[in-house]
Image (cartoon, rainbow, N blue to C red; front, side):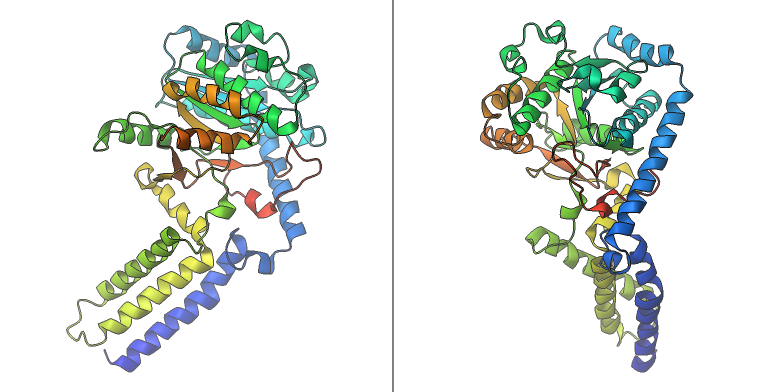
Length: 401
């Protein structure tokens, strides 16, 4: 093949890809370079709200098809069956201005369905940990109580944690917002730990597990504790969600190396396609064009969308050293929880919960992980902490949830 024909072929490929394929694709994909070029932020907000309404309606239909007594009894029987493999705690507080959004209902419906279909954790328990200071004013939690167990921090909590060393802390009623958030988290975590499970999954009431989440967690835990050489028996936690806005390509060594690796894959693919030809004088052109082609596609789609390819199999998910931010979904082994609670009891006046947890693992020289891509999605576009605070709506455009 002559160099001129090679050039024409590659130019045709570039024009087709970057004019006819990539722009229409990027318009639909949040975090791509073209997303906000062709989508107004207000329109994206309306779309996110519509998707939320549809998920909420599906969740209501899900509970409408359940038998309340048998649904609740499923977990009570699990609790009586002996050693639990997993306890899932959904930490919840009333959203005074946005309770009609149904975040908690969606989270419970998704996790309830997932646990009842799951075959990886044989004995499991799910409960809502209601940390609202007016527990019976949390209408959404009250409606769900007939389907799954609900506990209340501010109503007879001593029934659960009478012998807790942090009992006096839990009895406090005067604290600022972030201090309360940490104490709430401690209470729910300790309550889950008191059931003596092998693992505790702490999730906030505005997060949804993806269908493969328990399968992937089970696989990664087995890999860490059994198959990795040497095994890591004492990891502190696995973070199952990290904000997508911070998962893009950036001027960091690790992220730059990822772009270089993508370019190398492109080089290999383009050379391989034409390796069977006798004349190889132009293969270097294919290598250069292949690298540029793959790198441009990845940069335009951005890393968040490239990561989606890892969902093809549990083995493709990656474990990275955990960053400090965020606690929407955290997976803990039982051994770490007592020491973590002790640390948080002394740190709750100084730091936000996520930073306090991160400071704990660094001070104790422990290993903690973040899994990519996320196994949970965050649906709380309106936060419960800041009144009328709305986050970037592109973070809440999910397909197939």
